[in-house]
Length: 135
Image (cartoon, rainbow, N blue to C red; front, side, top):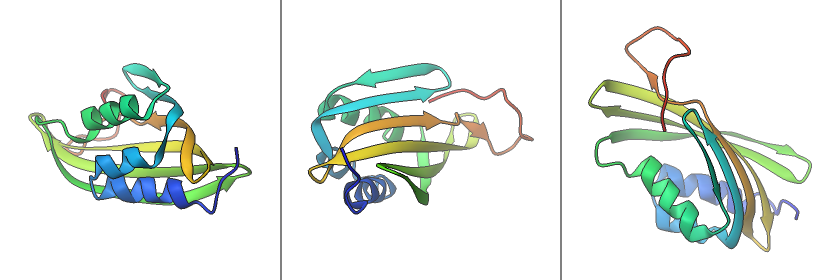
């Protein structure tokens, strides 16, 4: 696998920023090798449809209002591209923010391999600590 000119990974982040999860799914290889770690769970799936379902859980939760998804700068590490995004929103407990960073490899113009890590929800009303959890 090699990183194409960042096309699929960059477009994937753009789709998340636009909250277009169908477009994000279309950028995944049908048998994408996906692993993610959030504070409360490790996720493993080998299919684009399953990854889309995970994304819906993270970005389309009816109990949350997302205000912004902001991309972070991508970084190339040989054949792997690091991309990320910062999510700001509000839920019953108040405003929150979390960041996700993903390492991706592309094949034939689609994301074939992804490893994603999440900071967990951080309350914007309290001082920084290591106690928040979720997604």
